[in-house]
Image (tube, rainbow, N blue to C red; front, side, top):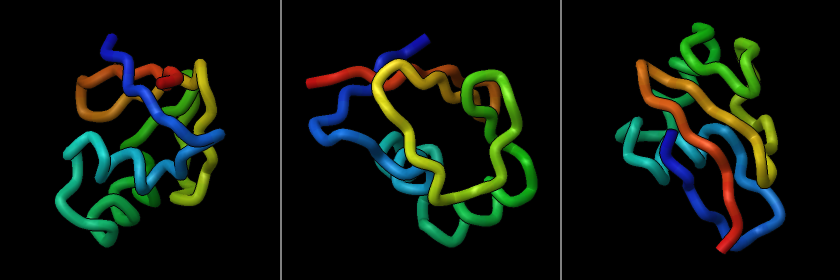
Length: 70
């Protein structure tokens, strides 16, 4: 599991996918999220604006991440 550090209170799920270079564009991130391809804390998440906070775990296409603080 890779830790992704953010220096804000939260990051939105679609922005997280772009930040980690898992998606090339916001449009692609939106589509993949709406199709149920992303899990947050063990549950499928279909809201692209879902706010991710320190300690949240994200799984996408065999990659696992956890949100940490800078």
